[in-house]
Length: 391
Ligand SMILES: Cc1cc2nc3c(=O)[nH]c(=O)nc-3n(C[C@H](O)[C@H](O)[C@H](O)COP(=O)(O)O)c2cc1C
Ligand SMILES: [Fe+2]
Ligand SMILES: [Fe+2]
Image (tube, rainbow, N blue to C red; front, side, top):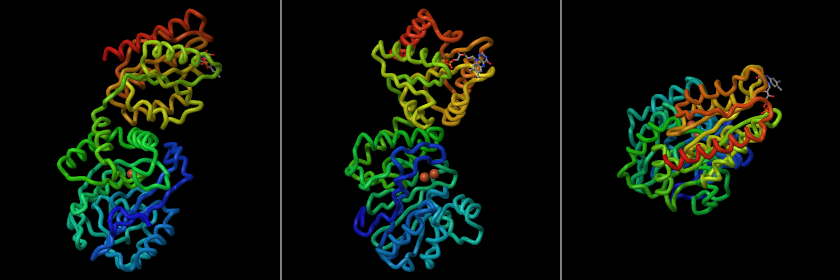
């Protein structure tokens, strides 16, 4: 049994096999963390996703008779943290459920209006014995109902979605997993889940300033105990929209023409010593592309014209990116067409609508680009690199 501190147990579930989290491709699985605090009073923090309900109840039972659970804290109503609610409430039949009013309203919509709960607006903290829990609403980090729970005696924050990562692992702590893998999954998670909510995340970070933190226990992935400052610092950079000297080229192609241009542009960028990542949407999921875009300065999107429109994967990607609102980026569109064309203009309009500062581009050629056109694409990439270096 894993303990964060004496009497504070992890009773969550590791989901090794999940590969799509509402469309976000989770190459390394995930976990749904839940915590059981055994003090004079016993408190359970968060449920887990529905398929793991039995596992959660079993874990609780191995520590204590579930009937002895006094409180259950629901930090967030999303089904990955509430799916086990019915089974857990049945097992922990003496527990009082505590949540924000917004969370209760949402839980009723998902699971039925007969669930009883006490709003934290009436009970902003719980005394458990030696330890206590204080509830801090963090609306829109992730949903309107979201809150975090803080245990001042242990300087321990149960942060729910914030600071999480979709990372299945046998180790439960940051010092037990590969550091590069961990930060990659933390940034991918931020980019795909929290990036458009940066104002709310920023407010939550402000609220945490001056709060002593020795451990951050999110509801996905590992617990930050060795260096909680590391993830706080990373979040500070992300909410501020910090970028590196890096470009991302995103494209799809039917007969290879747009691909040829994408590769030439990328080579041009790299020839100036600027890092570049290339994603063919026929191969890369949108969530991987967005993860790469998080800290990039430039986004270059290429589409062939298909039936007077953009290629469908490009359409899907642009919709996804527009919703996630990447900050502080420059961008350009390019493409290939056969006769009337049109894709480049549509891509440009969508990128503009996503808040990207557009750079004029004339990289839009008929059918397979010839040698001169490929050279122009290369030079265009160099020009983008110079803009990045000058930014
Ligand atoms: C199914 C299909 C529909 C197309 N529709 C158009 C079109 O409406 N307008 C146009 O200018 N070109 C159209 N084209 C031509 C392509 O845009 C052209 O072949 C382009 O070079 C393809 O780039 P790619 O090799 O990157 O796929 C179409 C091609 C295909 C295969
Ligand atoms: Fe969530
Ligand atoms: Fe979540």
